[in-house]
Every structure is written in structure tokens, then in C-alpha cells.
Amino acid sequence: MSDRLQNLTGLAPTAKLPAYDRNALKAGILHIGPGAFFRAHFAPFTDGALAAAGGDWGIEVASLRTPDVADNLSAQNGLYTVLIRDTSGTTAEVIGSILKAHVAPRDPAGLLARLEDPDIRIVSMTVTEKAYGFDPATGGLDLKHPDIVADLANRHAPRGVIGYLVEGLARRRQKGVAPFTPLSCDNLPSNGAVLKRLVLEFTSRIDPDLHGWIEANVPFPSTMVDRITPASTEATYADAERLTGRTDMAAIETEPFTQWVIEDHFANGRPAWEKVRGALMVEEVSAYEKMKLRMLNGAHSLLAYLGYIGGYEFIRDVMDDTGLAALAYRHMHAAARTLDAVPGIDLDAYAHELIARFANKAIAHRTYQIAMDGTQKLPQRLLEPACEALAHGDRAETYAIAVAAWMRYAIGEHGNGERYELRDPRAGEIATLIADVPRTGLAISAALFTLPGLFPAALTGHRAWTQDVSDKLEILIQDDRLPLF
Image (cartoon, rainbow, N blue to C red; front, top):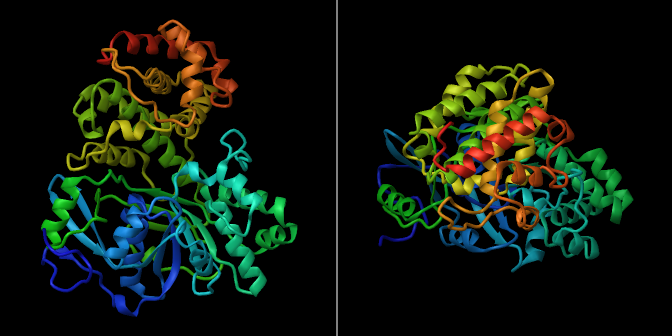
């Protein structure tokens, strides 16, 4: 094993290095949740902006839960490798924009001190949908979420992301310091608007004056993020070592494509992200977000559920099935019909690009990973556009296939009787609903259509469409090999 990646000297010539003076950087961004997607997306974009335009936009990262990633970054002085894989090979970029890593449970006071520091002008986050503490049924604050309960009870010693943001902003207001800009980068529809609502609902319960100050002074820009980032494996670490000459336990891998659409509303400056390929600063992000959710994410979910129950481990394997690849393309076009024009985007070309990305043999994106948390993902990816399609006289057939595939996955059992874990926050409710019903498409679909707050009445009340779902589910129950799709 080689020495650990801890500095930029003596690295292999196959590694691309940061194109700026890392020693001159100061931190201007605090990022909460330094997982793989942050390291494949946010940090490389910031690296590119620093190379193009400079500025005091170094990043400090903070983990609110497990210390592993933060500890690996600390051991490497914030350095790590991004492997970019496609069918032509793998390249390596060493990212230098991370200056320090915090583990909040070990030193909550240290993290709060950074949040109130005037040098920190952006607090970004990739913490997953579940960590925000919102109620999917209302879009508002989930008053039963453990972090929300704890932080409302003890606001000055937070443990969740909303609690930390609110306490940091409260301290800045008290000291007369300009607010930071909270920047959600999670794959959550209208993520900035959702975050703003949660913060304001939280503050309305503890401090009306702070609530008013945040509402008047703090922007919450929404973002649309897109880059496929599989989980790191032993092959990731081996290739990072081969291409850099150093051991890198924070290495990640990703695809060549990257896209970031950002609403350009910031309280106190930002990096020159627009100078980096794939970044777009806009006034309003919703059209781009809807395009991605419905065309990319919807097709991804369709392939994940059909692929997993059909025995395919990776999305790239699903795309070897010409029928399923054609179905994905057909679904993208169905989704495109529900969209208004997206400035600067050719939707047919975008669909072809998505098909090529899904088929990338160098990306090992597991169907089981994509299939998780379906009850949180289905509404915006599949159910909302299905409602619109039906309202305009479309049969919404590919949506029926996708929902039937999710229902088949929700049974939690392969055709050979082998059980698997249904990784979903409502797995218990789902299991209860279908525990005592016959294993038929009609019975299972009827039960799951009653899952509270998931399926809108426009779908459950559409008899032809629900029958279509039932019929397709029956096919999938009878034969996991997807004979008709």
C-alpha cells in the first residue's frame, strides 16, 4: 500500500491537480453532509470556479452523524480523488477545495462557531431527503421527526440540520453579522423553497422576531443537481491509488456528465460557478427541475424496479435488454409531453443523452440502491406527471408499468420466494397493508392504492388506469422475467 494522499507533491502524472494555490484559500462555504454526491458534484464545481476566478471560497465540511467520511478527509488534509468513468476509460482529478472537516457530535460548539463566523457566507447541504424533518404529505415540518422534536426542545444545542441552520442564523442576527445563504443540493423538488418553509415553521415556534428577520433577509435558492454517483468499492480505491500513486480512502467515482442549475439569489456573494462546464445560473429553476425529475429520475425508477425484480444488479445491465431500453426511451417521451419548454434544452436530444448515460458500462449503479425510498420519490417522479397525462387524454401507460413495478418490488419477495429488505421509510405500513391479501395484481394494487397520502385521487379514481396497473402487476407477479415489457 502506498502512502496516504495528504499533499499535492509527487503525485502520479495521470492525476489532474487543482489549478489554483490551495495554500492561499480561506473558507467561505460550510457544507453539511460530505457524502459521495457532494464529493462528485458540489466540490468539483467549486474547484473549477476557484481555478477560473479565484476567491475565498474554500469549503469546510461537517457530518451530523457518522464520522467516517469526515475522518478520512481529515486524515488527507481535505484532499480526495474523483474518478470519472466512461467506456473509453477512467481519469482521476484530485480535488483541493476542502480545507477542514468537522464531526458535529464530537464538537457541536465548534460547528456552531463556524456557522456564526462572518467568513462563512454559504451553508450548503446534501443530507438526503429524510434528514430535513419534513412531512411529505404536507411539505411542512414533521413535528414527530426525532431531530425536530429534540431541537425544538433545546434550540441552542441542535442535532439536526434545521436546528443547526436556525441556531447559526440566530447567532449571526444577535451579533449583527450578515446572514449566510442556505443552499440545499439534495434531490428534493423545490429544495430551496422546502428548506425555507421548514426553517420558518421552526422559527415561528421558538422566536417570532427571528422568523421575521430570516423571512426578510435570508435567500433560499433552489438548485437542480444531476450526476450519477455509485457507491465507492474496492475497485474505486484501487484505481484511485493506481492513478494518483497514493492511498485515498475518500475517493469516489462518477460519470462524465454533470449538471447544476442554481437560482442566482445569494445574500453575500458566491463562487463563479457559471464559469464551470455544466453549471447554469438562472432566475428560476423549476422548469429544469421538472425536466430532470420526470425524464431522468422517472425513467431511472422505472428501470430500477423492473431491473431489480428481473434479476439485474446494475442499471447498465438493464440497458442491455433492448425491450427495457426502448421502454425507458418511450417513458422519457411520455414525460416530455407533460413539460413546458425548457430554455436552452432540446428534450429529444436530452432523452438520447440520458439513454447513453444509463448504458455507460463504466458506471455500476445498483438497481437496489435506486429503488430505495420509493414512497418519497414516486410522487414527483411518476404520480404527478401521470395525473397530468391522464388529464390531457394520454393513457399514461408507461406510468402504469412503473407503478406496477414498484408495487411488485414492494412485495419484498423474489419469484423464488427469497425475501429482501424493502428499504423505504414506510416499509412497515406497506407490509401491514399487503400482509393478508392474496398475491394477485388486483388485491395487491387495491391495498397499496390506499396507502395514506401517496396516490392522488386523480389516479385512484381513474378506473381504466388503475385496472391497467392491476393487469401489469399481475403479469409481474406471475413472471419476474418481464415477458411483455
